[in-house]
Length: 213
Image 1: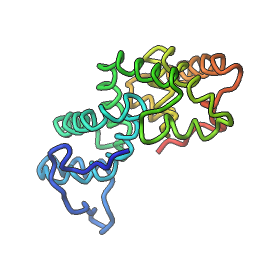
Image 2: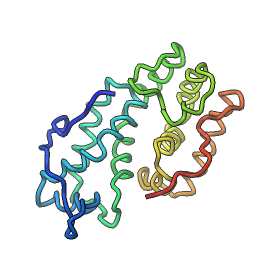
Image 3: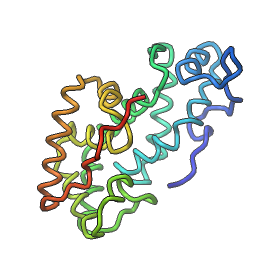
Image 4: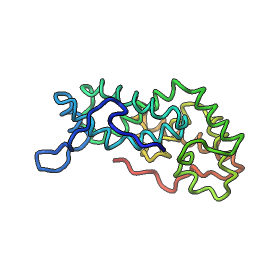
């Protein structure tokens, strides 16, 4: 994955934001301060840009990732005054913005997965869904997994890949603006379809639900 920097989204580099106790502030505090001091927003980029870039890369490939990363943080910057500061962790918010932007490129995403399925080669610098593929014993399943992802509905694929990227059920619900119960049902459906596509093996099946927060 290519390196990313605050300059990629037109934001200046800022020093770490510290709370009143001298510790680095949480995301909510940083965003709150950025309303009056926009340069503080670069701290949010420093914290989360690499993860968001990797998420976009695994869904659309490296060619689109830089542009969509920039768009994600520009949208977030414009909405910072409306951020719910009771939520200390901004990851669900940022992942939600990125997911909605990815949704505008649904055909590109499906083509990306189908290209992997045909060739068995992932053009992304990092393997598709690292946490998933680490549990796949046979490399041949890589292409099958990509084909299975291409066959999912956008809604089911969003949930599956957000959870795969490390968000908990509650965080995924916040990112997509849907109830936790809907996350659970979509995830179950997506896992079932992936398992069927892989002949009964489901590398997307975690042992435990990822912890929220």
